[in-house]
Length: 258
Image 1 (tube, rainbow, N blue to C red):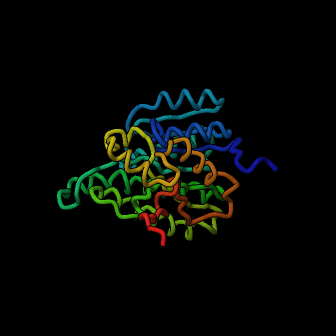
Image 2: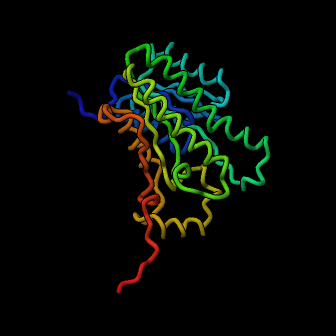
Image 3: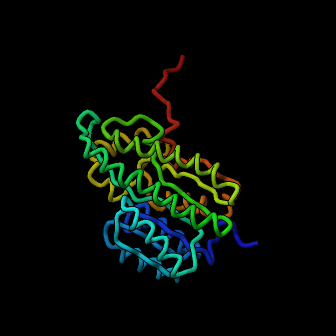
């Protein structure tokens, strides 16, 4: 049997592949042997070049995952180029920092368009193809903000929590067709998405609260995504893999000794 993390001969779709976690996932998949297609708000020529450098084919498109035609067009492009795809990763998202009481109706709906609607469109497009070909993998990138309470980003956390609920429901629906559906919940990760939000003070707090003592890297999240996309996770579905250096489980408050 091939190594469990080997993706040789497989075809993957990764949304938001132009930078950050999405780009790292695309590269990790290519390094494991997969061809990679992507859809990003900005051009992803760098990602395309990096995938090619691993000896794999790449299709990168500019578009909004909140646009159903763009998402379905991405799926069709992969089918036309490679005859289909085996793995679909919903990753594209944007961070919106604003207290819920100051969030307008327009803010709310615009945030959910890409951060939740785009995941629904991606899951549906992937499921339609994967159920017809006998199975595959869907991986939804969520966040620990959908697990713990984080003030100031209510719309974002609402979307992430909803994605996990969608992941569970789809895992049950699609299991008979051989499709696994899992979520990947990064904690504090250095990416362009967080460049402005992670002030020096926030970085200091994270270094104190994260048991491993540091903010994570996009490559560390990508390695976890590779696991969920590979045969190593063939009996795993409906789960959320937290990649956060231990932040969520840290309940230490400095109890004194007696």
